[in-house]
Picture 1: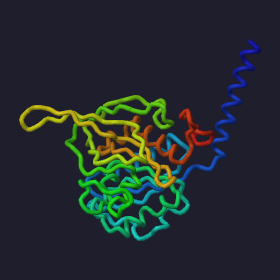
Picture 2 (picture 1 turned 90 degrees about the vertical axis):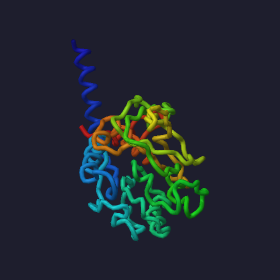
Picture 3 (picture 1 turned 180 degrees about the horizontal axis):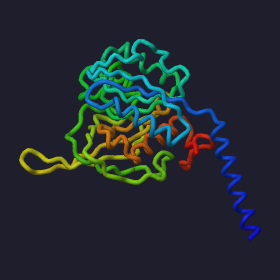
Picture 4 (picture 1 turned 135 degrees about the vertical axis):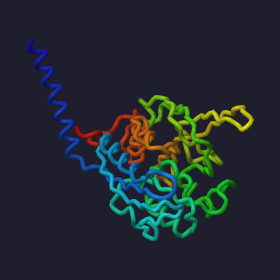
Length: 278
């Protein structure tokens, strides 16, 4: 029995060391931006904060606007230093009619300076200059936000279940994640996927036409992007609260955040000190 007791004691000591290390590691500071049209941001911001903080050594601060228009008066506008002191910015705003190039450049300023980004759902349909349905030339004024995202989208289909399949299961973000089918969700189109982006997952949706026939739509729904050397993770999934609070969705978002901050190793393991606190 003595060797077994010694082995158990060794495991306990190792666990205590890991837990102590996590407690001593300074948490990542994430800035979550929410507000604007068409979503229950009042609840979703709390779901995201709670879900991310439960999964990683991250403290999520919030900038929120209760304005439900397509031009929410977010405090980041006109303040290029809004992300000062933060390790990552999570864009979950819906600001489809914020089209002033100077304002957009201000929103992008921290990311141009090297602050990683995470972008959720309607962030892909924000900060649009001109017709978003027309391909924007990389590097042009119209493409500023798309260059950052790594993908251009302009619209979505009806709310129907989306079958999510991970295309790159060897990426650090996706290792250990399983395919799943969402509840009713919006499948965003892909006008273009930029060469700097790496697709991670596709979504397939069966859409019923007016004549009773059906069609299968499939697009990229999760990806990473190299934005001038800055890591960016995005997913277009996340319209409804039930999806946002789904453990599979929160796992994906949290792992995307950790990867963007360089806290996942090549095998997808969370680096010491950045896992959940026990």
